[in-house]
Length: 119
Length: 107
Image (cartoon, rainbow over all chains, first blue to last red; front, top):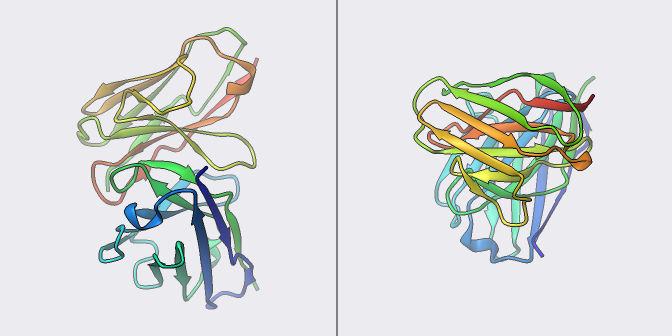
C-alpha cells in the first residue's frame, strides 16, 4: 500500500523558514516524480513545486520561486520542501503527492501538514 | 498560465441524480486533464485522468469526457459518499493549474 506521510508543519513568523518532509513507502520512491500541493484555509488547490524521479529537474510556481526549494533523498525515500522568507499568504495545508506516470497526475497524496505564518 | 474555470461553483442534488460538472481551459490542453474528489478534512483523490480514463478503484458511475478546452465530469447516479468538492486540473503545461472547485451538496 502506497503511503505518504508529511511532517514539519508549524506556526512560524513572517520572514521565517521551515522545512517540510514527506516519507514515502509501499512503492519504488526513486521511480516517480513528486510534487508539493497546498491548500489555503477554505480555498482551492495550488500546485507549488515538482521534482523529477532522480532529483535532477525541478519546477516551481511563480508564487514561491526563489523562496522555496524542493529536493529528495531517494536513499531515504523522502521528499523535502525548504521554505524561506515565509509570508502570511503561504499559510496552508501542504500535501506531498506522487505522480502516476508523468509530472502532475497525482495518484496518491499524503494527509497534509499545516503551515501557519503569523506574528 | 492556463486558467481553469469550473461551473457551477456549487450545486445541490439528491441521491440518485445525474450530476454534470464542466471545466473550461483558457487555451487548448488536448486531453491533459484530471479530475479529483476531496472530502472535508481529507486529501484529494484522483478520479479521472487523461480526460476520460477511470483511475483504478473508482466506481464506474464516474465518467469524464472532452478535449481541447471543454471537459465534463459526470456522476451517473449520485451516492451519499459522493457529496464532496470536485476539482479539475490541467497537466498540459507547467505550472499545472486547478479549477476553483465545485462543491456538491445534499438537496
